Image (cartoon, rainbow, N blue to C red; front, side, top):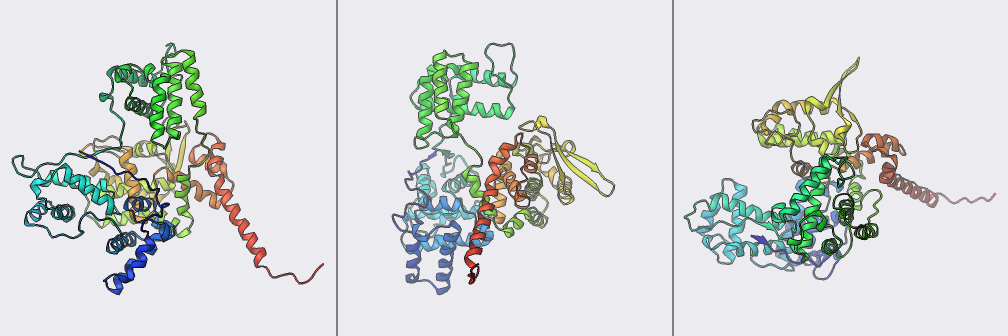
Length: 570
């Protein structure tokens, strides 16, 4: 089944049309609740506004808009614990619901029928039973029995969540309902309870190679192979060797371009090769499709796709010169000249203005490890310790994610003997690094002790019986997929300390903290991050120095303003 997403014309937090959090706050005194409940809800609403850093009169209670604001919030930057942040969200949600200003499509609390209670107890634990009961209450409000549940009811449940839910995304909740339902409820094929169709993402547009023309797919695979192992004597060959990760990214871009062209009414039978794919007429249609998804504006993805199309036109497809000139002109016109850090990363780094926040963040691995030690030694606690190891390593060795997930205890960790102490070095040869730079990081004893405990006790539980010396193995024994490792790190940091941090941001955090204590030492930062060119380092991190300079300038101005007047004149 496909969940149809409603159109969201509102820009998050900028459209104050309709009820706002300020309206909710004004109505709270008139609600029939206890004084303590009133104080709790008012505190939750005000705290949410402080975390969002917005005037309550400008924050719409339109649930999809408010949910997106909350999804980008960083409560940990203001010192809120995970428990307090959960209470803030639930208190705000309750205040909005009781105010009567939200759009509710069904009652919040409806008693379960006996049939639905029997469905709920089929789940093996309290959390999944709670999920089924919530879905059951919604169905009871519509007078729908378990045997009448189908895709239409699931879609209506999604619409209801989209208008009311602030914490989880509706996608995630519906996905949980379908998985639990099919696994524990609709288990008997002959029973009257039907299975639910697996949910798909409606806004995804990319086809798989199996869905695309076979001849095009074969040419794309040949291009990928030639990119990884170029023949210097061939007439049509990519100009240089690329890394496997780059080849995979190019392959993904070609699938997206082919999908965009087909959805733009290009006949699939006319896409028999990469030459057809990057021909100016077809390429123009595909690029228009991609730009329409970005409000008609080019972005980095479009710019990168044009560069790839130009390389294919020149070195692989051997298009006519006039076609190559046309693609080259588009490439220059739509090129995105991005210098320095993205605005999103700048916003993320603003979370680390307080020394208390920095201290809490750097002590996170110890906190996760303490929690894991209180639990039984099983795969769940092993995953927690694995995440603690990943965060601890990124804090002392700001690696790229691909290098992190491929770390091997035997191959990458070397003894660095000294007279006084036995040290460990993390050594990654240039051949494994994105820009061919050897990387070496001293590993503090506390981090090494964490790694050794993890490898001896917890890591064997995660390999599904495949012996491995990898720090982050998947169940097959190969390195863990980057998506899974990224999600584990991101979710753990947000859950434990309320900060929005992805693995790559650790590199920027490392530079920020180093320059905070050692202003102007860009060469040290260049070596720390493994940049080839110091200009790259300066472009990314000069703004840190600018912020410090502006702060010192403000102190100078305040000093002159607050100084006593000089009564005497020379």
